[in-house]
Each structure stands twice: as C-alpha cells, then as structure tokens.
Length: 534
Image 1 (cartoon, rainbow, N blue to C red):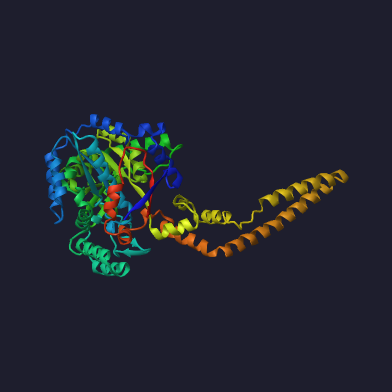
Image 2 (image 1 turned 30 degrees about the horizontal axis):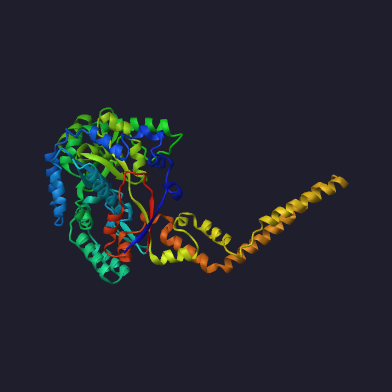
C-alpha cells in the first residue's frame, strides 16, 4: 500500500472560517487569542513558561492507572507511558472527542494520529522531556444523536435508542442486531472478519459505552502508547470544585467570553456562546443545566430540583461527581487536571479555544498550544484513474460539482463558445445605432429593442447548445457526479462522513499504521492532505 500525497492550503479548500485561517497562518490579528504558537520556537517558550507544581502527579498516575485497568487490553506501551506521568519533566499532548459509535467519522482517527505524531516530534526535538499522547473521552456528553451511528459505503448503521443521559454510562443493548447489520454491509474477506471481531469484542463484551470506547481506542492505538482518560471521575472533579463554584455563582466564563465576542464580532464569527452557568447537574439518567433563580436559589428546572446557595456549595464539596462541565468549561477542567502542553483539535474546536484565552488567564490555568488536527482526503486507484481520464487534478474536487461539470465542458475540443459572437453582435448593433441615429434620432430606441430581441434569441441557442453538449458528454458528467459523491458524500468532506471501517476494507489492515507513519508533525503551517493511492 502506497499513496502519493499532495498538500493543499486550507484556503483553497474553501472549507474553513476566517478565524481558523488567521490562526493557522499566525496572523497578527489573532496574536492576543493564544499564549504560544505551534512552531518549534512556540514550544520552546511554552516549556519555559509551564508551571504544573499544583498538580499532584502521583494522584493523577493513580487515577489514570485505575481507569486503564477497567479494560483488558491496555497495552504494555501505554502502561509504560502512564508511569512517566509521575515525572515533572513529562507533559501531555491531548485530543478528545465524543464517544462515537465505532469511532464515527474518520476525523476521530485523524485527531488521535496528530496527537501521537506531535509527541513523536516533540520527543525527538526536546529529548530532556517526555511527551505523552492522551485521548480525553467526552463521556459526559448527552447528545445521543451525534454519536449513535456511523457510515460505511453510504449505509448508515445506527444504534436505535433514546437517551438524555451521559452517553458514557449507557448500557449497551441491541448490539447483536447492529453487529448483524454491519456484517451484511461489509461482506466477507480477511479485513471484514477482523473488523467484525473488533466490533464484537468492543460492544458485545463491555457493560457501557465508555468502557467499549476505551477498549476500541486501545485496540487501534495502544501500540503507540496512547493514554485514554475519562473526565467522568470523582477524584478528577474534586480538583475542579472552585472553578465549578465560581462559574455557577459568579458567571465568570460568561462575562469574559461575552467581552471577547463584543470586541471581535466585526471581524470573526462567534463559534460558541457561553451560558450564564456552564455547569450541568448529572446523575445516571440525566444531565441538565443548573440555572440561577435568585441570589440564594439555584435550580435544575427540567427535573424540578432546587438548591439554596449553601446546599449547592455543600453538594459541590461532598459530591463533585454530580457536576459536569459543558464544552467550554471542559477546556479549563482538562487543563487544570493534566500537565498538558498542547491540544489537538478540529477547526471548530480551535475557534472556541481562541475565545477563551482571557478565561484561562483569570483562573491562572496554563493555556495549551493549539494544534490543528490532520486533515485528509483518501483517493483509491480506480477513483484516481477516472479523475485523470476526465483531465482533473485531485484538488479540483474541492469545487462544487456544477463548477466541475462546467469546466469539463469548456475544456472539450468540441466546446462552442458564444462569447466572440456576442461581442461581434453588440459591436454591429452599435454601428447600426450610430448610422441610423444620424438619419433619425427616434430610431435609436428601435435599434436597442432589436438588439435585446436578438440577444434573447442567442440565449435560447446557448441553452440548446449547452443541452446538446451535456447529452454528448452525459457519461463523463455522470462520472463527475459519482466521483464527487464518493469523495464528498452527502456534500460533506470524506473525513466528516466516512467511517474508518470503509478505509480498512479498501486499503487493508495496515492503513492506520501507514497514516501514523506518514502524517508527520513538523512545526510548520498545516495543510489539507490529499492521499492518492498509487
């Protein structure tokens, strides 16, 4: 298996926001939105500035080790990495995601690969330190519809249930039916058998989604020493009580981010608007926002639960596990409990991290270097051959399909252009207008009317010509449609729709290892990668 890699600037994909692009290019306009950049010099500065003296590394080691023992397949490589957490010269490069069924879209995989490769480069560059890749499981999220499915060969495989609870705690049921559906879609063969075995071991042999996801990530990435951590942990949350309390009682995050939004809304679109309170009340069956009723009363209105200020503070002190940060507050939680030097995220994640720099400063919590995750479009040999036969380059398929069709027609030898004839007709009527106006000025309007009628007739001829050209090249245009649909299914980037299982079946069981080996982190401005199979 081998791919030829092309690099496309993020701008040329037309998929990304101005704020993200300005950050990627380290423009002056966003310098105040982060601490240090992702260059080698940025990491050098970050290492000098880091201060994690307040982190109890032995406690963190015990928590992570305890969690690692919850599943049977934590690898020796990961166990060795966990031991290093106790050392003061050890730092993490963290990424995280929701607990998507069978990893969900491909970018789940790309985030982890970026964290692994960033650590590899950092360990080679700064060999007096240790850098550990960490995956933070967003097990407390309760948006079930976002995580309950994955797509293989344009077929949606879905876990049908209803839930508003933290998804990590969900009991796995009805997975035999999902397994059967998956097996019918992927067919036979060695790779199919391997995937079915992995799916079965993951979802039919574990009690809940958090344990299953931990097992799955270990199976795919354990040999690279990836550490998996679950924030749904009493001992971890016990270290974040003050920040929980401040957010609920004083609305600090809301105030500071609203200030950022007001200052920057003319130049940048807001990615995430904080609530007045960014903390959920959480039990096994629910995860609902806490709201302020008055200065002494707080409520979880959807379940009719109320607390006095004193009761709420007592509950925080004694049962912190019942409190859960939302996506914005989770950034601070993660940085408070981990010796984390960098965070790997997608464009949307990086955008909301950029809104939060002043919040980190307020709480005196270290702000990580933000690293855009690996982005990739994978093209197989058959797709590449069809593309070349149509005289397109791989970068062309980031354009809209109608634009591709138009360019194809224009570039055909038999293409007929009306532009020269339009210009000649207009020139002829202008001469005619001049000549007739000399005879009688009232004829000027008559000439203009005739020009309009003539151009209308020409437009009808154009439409007939375009129709004839499309009929003549109907097969090629269908191929363009099909290629665009395969590379951008449902008009989404491949990485945001297709599951890794489809790539595993197409490219073989070594394809993840190939991506890890060839997706190098080099401190440079990242680009979109197009990998075309040779």
